[in-house]
Figure 1 (spheres, rainbow, N blue to C red):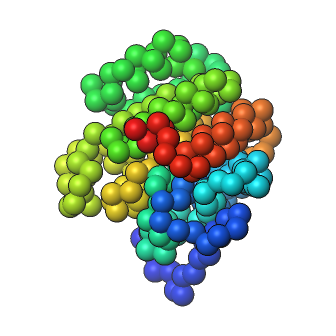
Figure 2 (cartoon, rainbow, N blue to C red):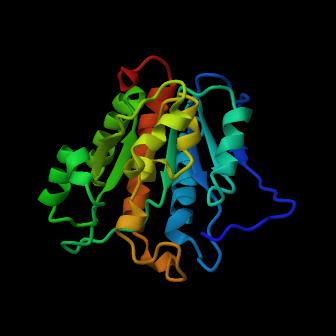
Amino acid sequence: MAMRWIHDLRGVNIVAFDSDEPREGDIVLVAHLDTVRNSPGADDNASGVAVALQTARWLSGTGHRAVSVLTDLEELSLLGARQLVRDLPRPKVVVCLDAIGYFNESPGAQRLPPGFGLMFPTLTKAVRARERRGDFLVAVCRRNSLAFATALADEMSGRGVATLTLEDRRWNGKGQSFTRWINPLLLDLDRSDHSPFWRARVPAVMLTGTATLRSPNYHRPADTPDSLDYDRMARTALALSTVLRIGSSGPSDVFA
């Protein structure tokens, strides 16, 4: 990426909630609203924004404690999410939606990074069992958000959107801003708005369609609305509204 000076850079995070102001212990649903130059950004990340809005609509009036946030400047070093970590009371868990609308059911459409099979053999086996079709989402989590990610993946799969879990087992304690560089092969797991929450040791899950490993439209002019799977997006919103409502209503086994 070419380094350039950006004068007077400004962004806006949109925070929405049903009634009370956000407070400590809320579930926070995040999707970034910006895209890159020369791309319409339908999958990355209008798909995430659309699902976040529909999820909030279905949650409305249910007595939940979920906060919906559309972040800005994700494509510029996650600046919106980094500010959000400072502004919001500490959440119970954060769910980040990033590029969740593009699916490709052709065998071989799903690529895997070099060395991925050695680091994540179970997930690799599951992808290969699907003949490497790009017909699933991935819930990326840390140990402190694994139970929630598993509950979400189960609900998603039950709603007809196959979802696999990937547990990032890197150090999750103090100093991880530095120690995460020890294994550069895993830095791709930090490339969205969940990452600043991980570094603040807040449980967070990224739900993604692995755009860079699947979509030929990623960050290109071809990332247009006609390439999205709206049925799967609607099912994703329904699953999220169910899990967020249960998880935010009080003690729940999704946090066990």
